[in-house]
Length: 445
Image 1: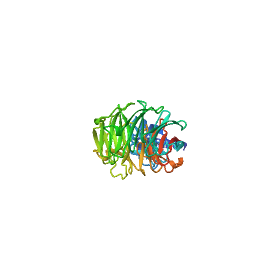
Image 2 (image 1 turned 120 degrees about the horizontal axis):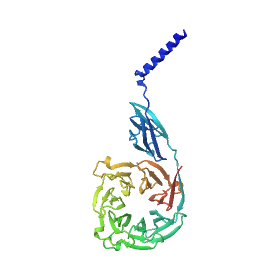
Image 3 (image 1 turned 90 degrees about the vertical axis):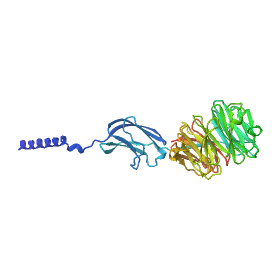
Image 4 (image 1 turned 180 degrees about the vertical axis):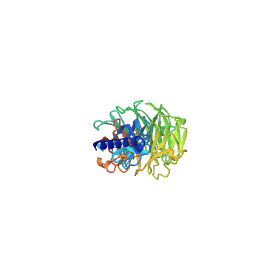
């Protein structure tokens, strides 16, 4: 009896082995298996690299809802994908990597994202101006600021970043608008308006004026109009470029020598346009971009010959001042511009306004109220201030990272006209309503 039972067990085991190796186990699909490395910038982005593949034909990321994240497919070792965390509201604190093997999916790994909070330190404040702050730049020990003190004069001040005290003050011929530090020449440039504009080249350490040019006493620049002011200053090559409002409905771009002397512009250095020119910026290829009050953006060569005019991107913005501010990205491939009554827009400089809008316009960011202050840091983050006491940090992909409200600094009626960023990522913002200069330190918790 025992022998018969043992024989039955042996036969049953043999049957199982036979079925296993005869194809019944074909329905058992081993899952995809691979190795990954994760590089996270907390609160900003996550980069995933497929390091090795043991099994699987493709791998991709899914968010907290289980939805596939576009553009994250990897199929061979060395493939890398990036997701921008602020742009993905459905991440819900983690991402999963799914793999596909023989047509079937399985979770290969899960990555918990770092929980990030942002805190602000706005304890650094300087309130020694009598009227609104319109020009800002930060370098070395100082933040340089220009202000409208009344209808006839203005102040240029160097404020110590360490202790909020004033190193020096220069009284200008009129209200001060742009202030720009030139690291190559170690010169501080400043321009004035509303009328009788003057361009200054100053010693940034102690404030003495190296040279000044009174526009209305210069034969090639003089304007027979009550309104004439300098709006922006841009450095490019061996020149500085100055934009102006000339009268009520014209503007100029004027080229000066870079350095302490400034030179004397000839007619070839002066371009007159049918709209005030609010802002200037340049790229690494030596191209100049101008923001105009008539809702347009224009691109120029260094000799001031025009390459194109963009009348489409900010058309119908609805604001009084048109395109107010303009900046290029750190890598020179994109242009950021803000319109008074419209959007903040990133355009792709590999294309132009004559191309399809889907190619030329990378993204639009809606923001209320008038916008003048615009700055970009070395990582491509965009900072925009408005007339509603707000400062927004926007990721390079067009998503809100954080919003700072000036009422937290006791400035609930602030209008942010100018922004500067120092090498530590601190933001300096000038307030129009209550003329206070505020340094905003951003800390990731």
